[in-house]
Length: 327
View 1 (cartoon, helix red, strand yellow):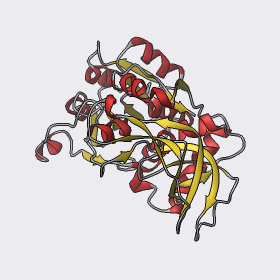
View 2: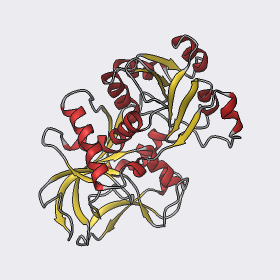
View 3: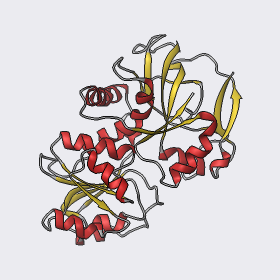
View 4: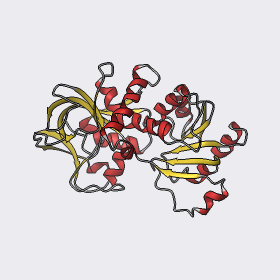
């Protein structure tokens, strides 16, 4: 038996219940992992509230690090005793140990500690696919401007650093001067406090009226319409979340009037659908962290027993950088 966080119905943070559950043996293509630390992400809120419905009762959580305890048939890239980390479906990482699919679990290099491993996988792989695999027409080149909302969050701070290493001019937005200063410290070329500034006007000023090649947006409703106005002709609006709620429906014809722009809705799990793609992306992330191009900033740590408070702080936008649950 081990402790795990589950929900029995959608709702607020009070629905997160710690319970004792049995952990069995791994089957075909599975492993059993004993967690050392667990990552917290906004997608966990979507699962808890029912915005992304789950079969109930359900485990919560998409990333963690730990030690492989058992390996099922057909698993060849991991063995008992390996240090490992993952971003994976199905949800269920808020626990002491679990049996889970091995496909997206990766060996964790010795140079990366467990807390960092738990904090970096979902957010780091997200930054990787956005900057490297979700690019506008003609790709991204050194000196290009990109707009990244929520730049002081877990994904944002990783993206700020990675974009700088690629030679990109990342314009980061955040909801306070303190968060803007943090994004600037971590590599944003320019920062905009969208609580006090018109970010469309500032983007046009920064880019000499041209606009950006791509907008990376995890905020949704509050930033969507203005983000479209920040794009240059043939630019790309890349949505990968909706922390303020989903954008309102729109007529595709408006994309023509704004310069024949593109819109895409991305998810990490489309990109890590195969073992090969997962490892390729993880290797890129591990290299960025080990070489110091990207530093994983963990600003909040909560014991598993304080998971309810962790969710409250996350939803209230009181967090910066990465957040982990400790075991």
